[in-house]
Length: 461
Ligand code: F0G
Image (tube, rainbow, N blue to C red; front, side, top):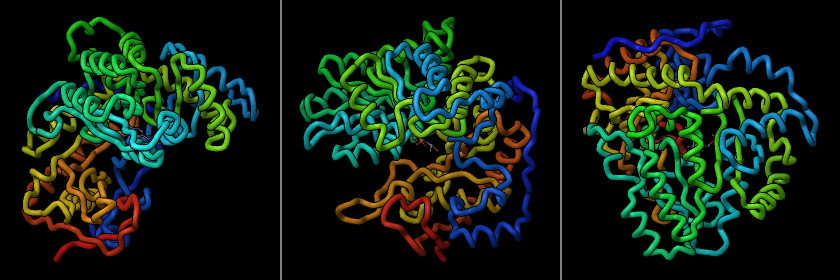
Protein backbone atom coordinates (compact mmCIF):
# COMPACT_ATOMS: atom_id res chain seq x y z
CA UNK A 1 0.00 0.00 0.00
CA UNK A 2 1.09 3.51 -0.71
CA UNK A 3 1.38 4.75 2.86
CA UNK A 4 1.99 8.26 1.65
CA UNK A 5 -0.85 10.65 1.66
CA UNK A 6 -1.48 14.29 0.91
CA UNK A 7 -1.21 16.28 4.11
CA UNK A 8 -3.89 18.78 5.03
CA UNK A 9 -3.79 22.06 3.08
CA UNK A 10 -5.16 23.86 6.14
CA UNK A 11 -4.48 24.21 9.84
CA UNK A 12 -7.00 23.97 12.63
CA UNK A 13 -8.33 27.14 14.21
CA UNK A 14 -11.32 25.86 16.16
CA UNK A 15 -12.13 22.45 17.57
CA UNK A 16 -15.30 20.59 18.44
CA UNK A 17 -14.80 17.86 21.05
CA UNK A 18 -16.07 14.39 20.21
CA UNK A 19 -16.48 11.62 22.72
CA UNK A 20 -15.67 7.95 22.56
CA UNK A 21 -18.16 5.68 24.31
CA UNK A 22 -17.59 2.22 25.76
CA UNK A 23 -18.73 -0.91 23.99
CA UNK A 24 -21.24 -1.55 26.82
CA UNK A 25 -22.72 1.92 26.31
CA UNK A 26 -22.93 1.37 22.57
CA UNK A 27 -24.75 -1.95 22.98
CA UNK A 28 -27.48 -0.12 24.92
CA UNK A 29 -27.51 2.90 22.59
CA UNK A 30 -27.82 0.76 19.47
CA UNK A 31 -30.63 -1.27 20.99
CA UNK A 32 -32.45 1.93 21.95
CA UNK A 33 -32.02 3.24 18.38
CA UNK A 34 -33.88 0.20 17.05
CA UNK A 35 -30.66 -1.04 15.43
CA UNK A 36 -30.90 1.95 13.14
CA UNK A 37 -28.06 4.47 13.60
CA UNK A 38 -30.22 7.22 12.03
CA UNK A 39 -31.92 7.31 15.43
CA UNK A 40 -28.70 7.77 17.41
CA UNK A 41 -27.88 11.12 18.92
CA UNK A 42 -24.80 12.56 17.27
CA UNK A 43 -23.28 12.98 20.75
CA UNK A 44 -23.19 9.22 21.00
CA UNK A 45 -21.24 8.91 17.75
CA UNK A 46 -17.45 9.22 17.80
CA UNK A 47 -16.80 9.54 14.06
CA UNK A 48 -19.84 10.40 11.98
CA UNK A 49 -19.66 9.11 8.41
CA UNK A 50 -23.40 9.14 7.79
CA UNK A 51 -23.12 11.77 5.08
CA UNK A 52 -20.94 14.42 3.49
CA UNK A 53 -24.00 16.66 3.19
CA UNK A 54 -23.79 19.88 5.17
CA UNK A 55 -21.26 18.28 7.50
CA UNK A 56 -18.07 19.91 6.21
CA UNK A 57 -15.99 22.50 8.06
CA UNK A 58 -16.17 26.09 6.86
CA UNK A 59 -13.02 28.12 6.31
CA UNK A 60 -12.12 31.33 8.15
CA UNK A 61 -13.10 33.24 5.01
CA UNK A 62 -16.54 31.65 5.06
CA UNK A 63 -17.04 32.46 8.74
CA UNK A 64 -15.95 36.03 8.04
CA UNK A 65 -18.35 36.23 5.09
CA UNK A 66 -21.28 35.30 7.34
CA UNK A 67 -21.00 38.71 8.94
CA UNK A 68 -21.71 40.37 5.61
CA UNK A 69 -25.08 38.64 5.28
CA UNK A 70 -27.83 40.96 4.08
CA UNK A 71 -31.09 39.58 5.40
CA UNK A 72 -33.36 41.74 3.24
CA UNK A 73 -36.43 39.79 2.16
CA UNK A 74 -36.09 41.08 -1.40
CA UNK A 75 -33.05 42.14 -3.39
CA UNK A 76 -30.46 41.06 -0.81
CA UNK A 77 -26.88 42.09 -1.51
CA UNK A 78 -25.83 38.55 -0.57
CA UNK A 79 -28.01 37.15 -3.36
CA UNK A 80 -26.25 39.30 -5.95
CA UNK A 81 -22.83 38.28 -4.64
CA UNK A 82 -23.76 34.60 -4.87
CA UNK A 83 -25.38 35.06 -8.28
CA UNK A 84 -22.17 36.54 -9.66
CA UNK A 85 -20.09 33.58 -8.43
CA UNK A 86 -22.54 31.05 -9.89
CA UNK A 87 -22.69 32.82 -13.23
CA UNK A 88 -18.88 32.90 -13.33
CA UNK A 89 -18.61 29.20 -12.58
CA UNK A 90 -21.38 27.95 -14.87
CA UNK A 91 -21.51 30.53 -17.63
CA UNK A 92 -25.32 30.37 -17.26
CA UNK A 93 -27.65 33.35 -17.46
CA UNK A 94 -30.02 32.67 -14.56
CA UNK A 95 -29.72 31.67 -10.91
CA UNK A 96 -32.38 30.98 -8.27
CA UNK A 97 -31.45 29.86 -4.74
CA UNK A 98 -33.21 27.01 -2.91
CA UNK A 99 -32.89 25.83 0.68
CA UNK A 100 -31.11 22.64 -0.42
CA UNK A 101 -30.90 20.23 -3.36
CA UNK A 102 -34.35 18.72 -2.97
CA UNK A 103 -35.88 22.19 -2.83
CA UNK A 104 -34.35 22.90 -6.23
CA UNK A 105 -35.64 19.53 -7.51
CA UNK A 106 -39.21 20.13 -6.39
CA UNK A 107 -39.33 23.44 -8.23
CA UNK A 108 -37.57 22.49 -11.48
CA UNK A 109 -38.39 18.86 -12.28
CA UNK A 110 -42.19 19.26 -12.56
CA UNK A 111 -41.63 21.95 -15.21
CA UNK A 112 -40.49 19.27 -17.63
CA UNK A 113 -43.40 16.92 -17.04
CA UNK A 114 -45.92 18.19 -19.56
CA UNK A 115 -48.15 15.12 -20.01
CA UNK A 116 -48.82 11.69 -18.50
CA UNK A 117 -46.47 8.79 -19.16
CA UNK A 118 -43.18 10.71 -19.24
CA UNK A 119 -39.82 9.53 -17.90
CA UNK A 120 -36.52 10.99 -16.84
CA UNK A 121 -33.41 9.03 -17.70
CA UNK A 122 -30.32 9.38 -15.53
CA UNK A 123 -27.07 7.48 -15.12
CA UNK A 124 -28.49 7.01 -11.60
CA UNK A 125 -31.11 9.03 -9.78
CA UNK A 126 -30.36 10.01 -6.20
CA UNK A 127 -33.28 9.08 -3.86
CA UNK A 128 -34.72 12.58 -3.52
CA UNK A 129 -34.39 13.18 -7.26
CA UNK A 130 -36.27 9.94 -7.89
CA UNK A 131 -38.91 10.98 -5.35
CA UNK A 132 -39.46 14.35 -7.06
CA UNK A 133 -39.60 12.72 -10.49
CA UNK A 134 -42.30 10.39 -9.19
CA UNK A 135 -44.16 13.14 -7.33
CA UNK A 136 -44.27 15.06 -10.61
CA UNK A 137 -46.03 12.06 -12.16
CA UNK A 138 -43.09 10.76 -14.19
CA UNK A 139 -40.91 7.66 -13.98
CA UNK A 140 -37.21 7.54 -13.11
CA UNK A 141 -35.08 5.22 -15.23
CA UNK A 142 -31.42 4.51 -14.41
CA UNK A 143 -29.06 3.90 -17.32
CA UNK A 144 -25.54 3.36 -16.02
CA UNK A 145 -22.81 1.11 -17.46
CA UNK A 146 -22.74 -2.50 -16.21
CA UNK A 147 -19.19 -2.10 -14.83
CA UNK A 148 -20.73 0.03 -12.09
CA UNK A 149 -22.09 -3.14 -10.48
CA UNK A 150 -18.83 -5.11 -10.68
CA UNK A 151 -17.37 -3.73 -7.48
CA UNK A 152 -14.01 -5.53 -7.63
CA UNK A 153 -13.16 -4.54 -11.22
CA UNK A 154 -11.40 -1.29 -11.96
CA UNK A 155 -13.06 1.16 -14.32
CA UNK A 156 -12.01 4.83 -14.26
CA UNK A 157 -15.54 6.17 -14.80
CA UNK A 158 -18.11 3.87 -13.24
CA UNK A 159 -20.67 6.67 -13.30
CA UNK A 160 -20.84 6.68 -17.11
CA UNK A 161 -24.11 6.48 -19.00
CA UNK A 162 -24.75 3.28 -20.94
CA UNK A 163 -24.99 5.04 -24.29
CA UNK A 164 -26.43 2.18 -26.30
CA UNK A 165 -29.13 1.57 -23.73
CA UNK A 166 -29.84 5.29 -23.65
CA UNK A 167 -30.46 5.32 -27.41
CA UNK A 168 -32.67 2.23 -27.12
CA UNK A 169 -34.68 3.74 -24.25
CA UNK A 170 -35.32 6.95 -26.17
CA UNK A 171 -36.34 4.96 -29.24
CA UNK A 172 -38.60 2.61 -27.32
CA UNK A 173 -40.36 5.37 -25.35
CA UNK A 174 -40.37 8.06 -27.99
CA UNK A 175 -38.25 11.19 -27.52
CA UNK A 176 -41.22 13.38 -26.67
CA UNK A 177 -42.00 11.11 -23.71
CA UNK A 178 -38.56 11.70 -22.21
CA UNK A 179 -38.93 14.68 -19.87
CA UNK A 180 -35.20 15.11 -19.40
CA UNK A 181 -31.81 13.47 -19.11
CA UNK A 182 -30.32 13.89 -15.66
CA UNK A 183 -26.53 13.71 -15.41
CA UNK A 184 -25.67 12.85 -11.81
CA UNK A 185 -22.06 13.91 -11.22
CA UNK A 186 -20.57 12.21 -9.41
CA UNK A 187 -22.81 9.18 -9.31
CA UNK A 188 -23.52 9.09 -5.58
CA UNK A 189 -25.64 5.96 -5.27
CA UNK A 190 -23.03 3.61 -6.72
CA UNK A 191 -20.00 4.98 -4.95
CA UNK A 192 -19.47 8.64 -5.80
CA UNK A 193 -18.22 7.39 -9.14
CA UNK A 194 -17.16 9.94 -11.74
CA UNK A 195 -18.51 10.38 -15.26
CA UNK A 196 -16.04 11.08 -18.06
CA UNK A 197 -16.31 14.22 -20.16
CA UNK A 198 -16.36 12.09 -23.29
CA UNK A 199 -19.36 10.15 -21.99
CA UNK A 200 -21.12 13.36 -20.94
CA UNK A 201 -20.48 14.84 -24.37
CA UNK A 202 -21.93 11.82 -26.13
CA UNK A 203 -24.92 11.78 -23.79
CA UNK A 204 -25.47 15.45 -24.51
CA UNK A 205 -25.23 14.82 -28.28
CA UNK A 206 -27.85 12.09 -28.05
CA UNK A 207 -30.19 14.30 -26.01
CA UNK A 208 -29.74 17.27 -28.33
CA UNK A 209 -30.42 15.16 -31.42
CA UNK A 210 -33.80 14.35 -29.87
CA UNK A 211 -34.48 17.77 -28.40
CA UNK A 212 -34.49 16.41 -24.85
CA UNK A 213 -33.54 18.84 -22.04
CA UNK A 214 -30.34 18.06 -20.14
CA UNK A 215 -30.17 18.61 -16.40
CA UNK A 216 -27.02 18.28 -14.33
CA UNK A 217 -27.51 17.00 -10.78
CA UNK A 218 -24.14 18.34 -9.74
CA UNK A 219 -23.87 18.11 -5.96
CA UNK A 220 -20.27 16.90 -6.41
CA UNK A 221 -19.35 18.43 -9.76
CA UNK A 222 -15.94 19.72 -8.56
CA UNK A 223 -14.91 16.25 -7.40
CA UNK A 224 -16.00 14.92 -10.79
CA UNK A 225 -13.89 17.55 -12.54
CA UNK A 226 -10.85 16.53 -10.50
CA UNK A 227 -11.29 12.88 -11.55
CA UNK A 228 -11.56 14.00 -15.18
CA UNK A 229 -8.30 15.90 -14.78
CA UNK A 230 -6.59 12.88 -13.23
CA UNK A 231 -7.96 10.13 -15.43
CA UNK A 232 -9.08 11.47 -18.80
CA UNK A 233 -6.66 12.15 -21.62
CA UNK A 234 -6.48 15.75 -22.72
CA UNK A 235 -7.52 17.24 -19.39
CA UNK A 236 -4.22 16.97 -17.49
CA UNK A 237 -3.37 20.62 -17.96
CA UNK A 238 -6.83 22.14 -17.67
CA UNK A 239 -7.97 23.86 -14.50
CA UNK A 240 -10.90 22.52 -12.48
CA UNK A 241 -12.70 25.72 -13.38
CA UNK A 242 -12.19 25.07 -17.11
CA UNK A 243 -13.26 21.44 -16.85
CA UNK A 244 -16.38 22.40 -14.92
CA UNK A 245 -17.23 25.09 -17.48
CA UNK A 246 -17.01 22.47 -20.20
CA UNK A 247 -19.43 20.25 -18.26
CA UNK A 248 -21.92 23.10 -17.81
CA UNK A 249 -21.66 23.88 -21.51
CA UNK A 250 -23.16 20.46 -22.27
CA UNK A 251 -26.39 20.98 -20.33
CA UNK A 252 -29.40 23.29 -20.06
CA UNK A 253 -30.01 23.33 -16.31
CA UNK A 254 -27.79 22.83 -13.27
CA UNK A 255 -29.29 21.67 -9.98
CA UNK A 256 -27.06 21.43 -6.96
CA UNK A 257 -27.22 20.44 -3.37
CA UNK A 258 -24.76 23.11 -2.23
CA UNK A 259 -24.25 21.16 1.00
CA UNK A 260 -21.59 19.12 -0.78
CA UNK A 261 -19.24 20.88 -3.21
CA UNK A 262 -20.56 24.24 -2.03
CA UNK A 263 -18.71 23.60 1.25
CA UNK A 264 -21.74 24.93 3.08
CA UNK A 265 -24.00 23.59 5.79
CA UNK A 266 -27.15 24.41 3.83
CA UNK A 267 -28.17 25.63 0.38
CA UNK A 268 -29.35 24.65 -3.06
CA UNK A 269 -28.81 26.03 -6.54
CA UNK A 270 -30.97 26.29 -9.64
CA UNK A 271 -29.03 27.66 -12.61
CA UNK A 272 -30.52 27.91 -16.09
CA UNK A 273 -28.38 28.39 -19.17
CA UNK A 274 -30.63 30.57 -21.32
CA UNK A 275 -34.25 29.37 -21.35
CA UNK A 276 -36.17 32.54 -20.44
CA UNK A 277 -39.55 30.82 -20.23
CA UNK A 278 -38.25 28.09 -17.92
CA UNK A 279 -36.63 30.72 -15.72
CA UNK A 280 -39.88 32.65 -15.46
CA UNK A 281 -41.81 29.50 -14.53
CA UNK A 282 -39.27 28.49 -11.87
CA UNK A 283 -39.17 32.01 -10.48
CA UNK A 284 -42.93 31.95 -10.08
CA UNK A 285 -42.98 28.47 -8.61
CA UNK A 286 -40.15 29.08 -6.12
CA UNK A 287 -42.16 31.64 -4.17
CA UNK A 288 -44.79 29.31 -2.65
CA UNK A 289 -42.34 26.38 -2.39
CA UNK A 290 -39.09 27.85 -1.09
CA UNK A 291 -39.31 31.62 -0.80
CA UNK A 292 -38.92 34.89 -2.67
CA UNK A 293 -36.54 34.42 -5.67
CA UNK A 294 -33.68 36.35 -4.08
CA UNK A 295 -33.47 34.07 -1.04
CA UNK A 296 -35.28 30.83 -1.93
CA UNK A 297 -35.14 29.47 1.62
CA UNK A 298 -31.60 30.60 2.41
CA UNK A 299 -30.51 33.27 4.83
CA UNK A 300 -28.38 36.12 3.53
CA UNK A 301 -25.43 34.92 5.61
CA UNK A 302 -25.70 31.40 4.23
CA UNK A 303 -25.62 32.80 0.70
CA UNK A 304 -22.42 34.64 1.62
CA UNK A 305 -20.78 31.50 3.00
CA UNK A 306 -21.82 29.57 -0.10
CA UNK A 307 -20.41 32.21 -2.45
CA UNK A 308 -17.01 31.70 -0.80
CA UNK A 309 -17.35 27.90 -0.44
CA UNK A 310 -18.13 27.35 -4.12
CA UNK A 311 -14.84 28.98 -5.06
CA UNK A 312 -12.81 27.15 -2.40
CA UNK A 313 -14.17 23.81 -3.63
CA UNK A 314 -12.56 24.42 -7.03
CA UNK A 315 -9.06 24.82 -5.56
CA UNK A 316 -6.79 21.97 -6.52
CA UNK A 317 -4.94 21.80 -3.20
CA UNK A 318 -8.25 21.31 -1.48
CA UNK A 319 -9.50 18.68 -3.96
CA UNK A 320 -6.22 16.75 -3.98
CA UNK A 321 -6.37 16.31 -0.21
CA UNK A 322 -10.12 15.67 -0.20
CA UNK A 323 -9.94 12.82 -2.70
CA UNK A 324 -6.75 11.46 -1.19
CA UNK A 325 -8.46 11.03 2.19
CA UNK A 326 -11.07 8.85 0.54
CA UNK A 327 -8.38 6.98 -1.42
CA UNK A 328 -6.40 6.39 1.79
CA UNK A 329 -9.33 4.83 3.63
CA UNK A 330 -10.16 2.73 0.57
CA UNK A 331 -6.57 1.46 0.28
CA UNK A 332 -6.43 0.50 3.93
CA UNK A 333 -9.59 -1.58 3.58
CA UNK A 334 -8.62 -3.18 0.29
CA UNK A 335 -5.19 -4.14 1.62
CA UNK A 336 -6.94 -5.99 4.43
CA UNK A 337 -9.13 -7.85 1.92
CA UNK A 338 -12.34 -5.94 2.62
CA UNK A 339 -14.39 -5.86 -0.62
CA UNK A 340 -15.11 -2.28 -1.68
CA UNK A 341 -16.35 -0.47 -4.77
CA UNK A 342 -13.05 -0.09 -6.64
CA UNK A 343 -11.70 2.40 -7.38
CA UNK A 344 -13.13 4.57 -4.62
CA UNK A 345 -15.18 7.59 -5.64
CA UNK A 346 -15.05 11.16 -4.49
CA UNK A 347 -16.90 11.38 -1.23
CA UNK A 348 -17.03 7.95 0.33
CA UNK A 349 -15.77 4.40 0.52
CA UNK A 350 -18.53 1.90 -0.27
CA UNK A 351 -18.07 -1.54 1.29
CA UNK A 352 -19.61 -4.39 -0.72
CA UNK A 353 -21.57 -6.20 2.00
CA UNK A 354 -23.19 -8.67 -0.39
CA UNK A 355 -19.71 -10.08 -1.08
CA UNK A 356 -18.68 -9.67 2.55
CA UNK A 357 -21.71 -11.44 4.08
CA UNK A 358 -23.19 -13.81 1.48
CA UNK A 359 -24.87 -15.75 4.31
CA UNK A 360 -27.27 -12.84 5.05
CA UNK A 361 -30.21 -12.69 2.59
CA UNK A 362 -31.00 -9.36 0.93
CA UNK A 363 -34.23 -8.92 2.92
CA UNK A 364 -32.30 -9.23 6.16
CA UNK A 365 -30.19 -6.28 4.99
CA UNK A 366 -26.53 -7.40 5.13
CA UNK A 367 -25.18 -3.84 4.84
CA UNK A 368 -27.34 -2.64 7.75
CA UNK A 369 -25.95 -5.46 9.81
CA UNK A 370 -22.38 -4.39 8.99
CA UNK A 371 -23.24 -0.74 9.74
CA UNK A 372 -24.46 -1.77 13.20
CA UNK A 373 -21.37 -3.90 13.85
CA UNK A 374 -19.07 -1.02 12.91
CA UNK A 375 -20.89 1.28 15.34
CA UNK A 376 -20.54 -1.30 18.11
CA UNK A 377 -16.86 -1.74 17.31
CA UNK A 378 -15.75 1.88 17.53
CA UNK A 379 -18.66 4.35 17.64
CA UNK A 380 -18.34 5.00 13.92
CA UNK A 381 -21.63 5.77 12.15
CA UNK A 382 -21.93 4.68 8.51
CA UNK A 383 -25.05 4.32 6.37
CA UNK A 384 -26.71 1.49 4.44
CA UNK A 385 -27.23 1.92 0.70
CA UNK A 386 -28.93 -1.26 -0.41
CA UNK A 387 -32.22 -3.13 -0.11
CA UNK A 388 -33.13 -1.51 3.23
CA UNK A 389 -32.97 1.92 1.60
CA UNK A 390 -34.62 0.75 -1.63
CA UNK A 391 -37.89 -0.21 0.07
CA UNK A 392 -40.84 -2.14 -1.33
CA UNK A 393 -42.52 -2.51 -4.69
CA UNK A 394 -45.48 -0.08 -4.57
CA UNK A 395 -47.79 -2.66 -6.19
CA UNK A 396 -46.82 -6.03 -4.72
CA UNK A 397 -45.45 -4.63 -1.41
CA UNK A 398 -42.59 -7.13 -1.69
CA UNK A 399 -39.11 -6.05 -0.59
CA UNK A 400 -37.17 -4.87 -3.64
CA UNK A 401 -33.72 -6.40 -4.09
CA UNK A 402 -30.96 -3.89 -4.70
CA UNK A 403 -28.23 -4.94 -7.16
CA UNK A 404 -25.66 -3.83 -4.57
CA UNK A 405 -25.69 -4.06 -0.77
CA UNK A 406 -23.36 -1.26 0.30
CA UNK A 407 -22.17 0.33 3.50
CA UNK A 408 -21.22 3.94 2.75
CA UNK A 409 -18.42 5.44 4.82
CA UNK A 410 -18.96 9.06 3.82
CA UNK A 411 -16.17 11.50 4.51
CA UNK A 412 -17.24 15.03 5.51
CA UNK A 413 -15.10 17.77 3.93
CA UNK A 414 -12.13 19.18 5.92
CA UNK A 415 -13.54 17.65 9.11
CA UNK A 416 -11.62 14.52 10.10
CA UNK A 417 -7.92 13.68 10.05
CA UNK A 418 -6.11 10.62 8.71
CA UNK A 419 -5.88 9.40 12.31
CA UNK A 420 -9.66 9.35 12.47
CA UNK A 421 -9.70 7.40 9.22
CA UNK A 422 -7.31 4.88 10.79
CA UNK A 423 -9.83 4.37 13.60
CA UNK A 424 -12.50 3.76 10.96
CA UNK A 425 -10.32 1.37 8.98
CA UNK A 426 -9.35 -0.61 12.10
CA UNK A 427 -13.03 -0.94 13.07
CA UNK A 428 -14.16 -2.13 9.64
CA UNK A 429 -11.25 -4.55 9.39
CA UNK A 430 -12.09 -5.98 12.84
CA UNK A 431 -15.73 -6.47 11.77
CA UNK A 432 -14.57 -8.05 8.52
CA UNK A 433 -12.50 -10.59 10.47
CA UNK A 434 -15.67 -11.91 12.13
CA UNK A 435 -18.03 -11.34 9.20
CA UNK A 436 -19.29 -14.92 9.30
CA UNK A 437 -20.76 -14.36 12.77
CA UNK A 438 -22.84 -11.35 11.72
CA UNK A 439 -26.60 -11.86 11.68
CA UNK A 440 -29.24 -10.12 9.58
CA UNK A 441 -31.92 -7.78 10.89
CA UNK A 442 -35.68 -7.72 10.52
CA UNK A 443 -38.42 -5.16 11.17
CA UNK A 444 -39.96 -4.34 14.51
CA UNK A 445 -41.60 -1.22 13.04
CA UNK A 446 -41.62 -0.21 9.37
CA UNK A 447 -43.01 3.14 8.18
CA UNK A 448 -44.85 3.21 4.82
CA UNK A 449 -42.33 5.43 2.99
CA UNK A 450 -38.61 6.26 3.24
CA UNK A 451 -38.35 3.50 5.78
CA UNK A 452 -34.60 3.63 6.34
CA UNK A 453 -34.87 6.88 8.31
CA UNK A 454 -37.26 5.78 11.04
CA UNK A 455 -37.58 1.99 10.99
CA UNK A 456 -36.97 0.03 14.16
CA UNK A 457 -35.14 -3.22 13.56
CA UNK A 458 -34.06 -6.25 15.57
CA UNK A 459 -31.40 -8.88 14.94
CA UNK A 460 -32.59 -12.15 13.44
CA UNK A 461 -32.11 -14.92 15.99
N1 F0G B 1 -28.57 14.92 -5.60
C1 F0G B 1 -27.55 14.18 -5.14
C2 F0G B 1 -26.61 13.53 -6.09
C3 F0G B 1 -27.37 14.03 -3.76
O1 F0G B 1 -26.35 13.30 -3.29
C4 F0G B 1 -28.27 14.67 -2.87
C5 F0G B 1 -28.14 14.53 -1.43
C6 F0G B 1 -29.32 15.43 -3.42
C7 F0G B 1 -29.43 15.54 -4.80
C8 F0G B 1 -30.34 16.12 -2.56
O2 F0G B 1 -29.79 17.22 -1.95
O3 F0G B 1 -29.84 16.68 0.49
O4 F0G B 1 -29.42 19.01 -0.33
O5 F0G B 1 -31.66 18.02 -0.52
N2 F0G B 1 -27.41 13.68 -0.85
C9 F0G B 1 -27.16 13.52 0.56
C10 F0G B 1 -26.38 12.25 0.81
C11 F0G B 1 -28.35 13.64 1.44
O6 F0G B 1 -26.21 11.89 1.99
O7 F0G B 1 -25.91 11.61 -0.12
P1 F0G B 1 -30.20 17.76 -0.49
